[in-house]
Length: 241
Image 1: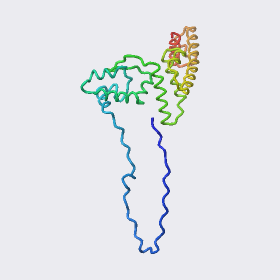
Image 2 (image 1 turned 90 degrees about the vertical axis):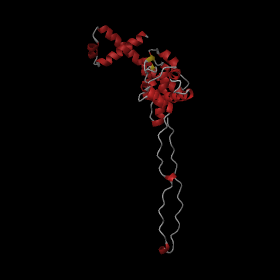
Image 3 (image 1 turned 120 degrees about the vertical axis):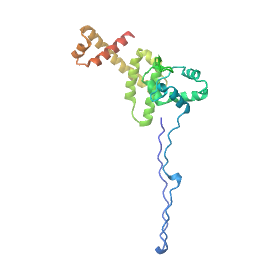
Image 4 (image 1 turned 60 degrees about the vertical axis):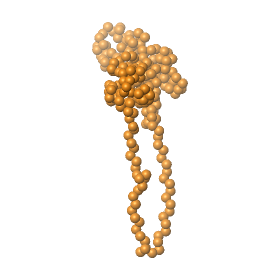
């Protein structure tokens, strides 16, 4: 999230002094160098947290070029693994900075599972954590670009809901918060998801009644076989839930 810079008007220049009466006595102005402060400043790159640098060296699969969601309790695991290398308060600050970064939140918003220090999957990402990360990532995008992110965010909420395996009412109760604008968008996403679920269920019933393989059934309805298979699987999951 970046704060927009404001432009200020340059102060008016004082009027030029009147010309000398004797042009022969006028002396050419000496060229002067612009003061250092007036030169264009080159922005310095942000300073990288040294503890995060150390973590990237120790665990490049978690803190390197690609961020992976971390298991809960990773703080204690790192301290136990490196008691003489990483200081407690420095680690707390580094992990707070890491997990608040847009790159990390984007990984959480994608619904990826949580990983331990060895990079092994240890638990699924909770639906409410996916939802909150989505809201924050798109809020930052809007602040940065001014883009109307609501349509894309609504679609991502639909996908997150479908991946959760929860009913509409259970998902709503789990993730609904105090942000009224977000709650309106959540309601719209769940209405859209319910409509898609009804369509998927109708397709599944037609498929079951046809007795045909997916490829043949998809061709009968003018659908892509892979798309039809995804819709049928989604309907089965919702029916099972």
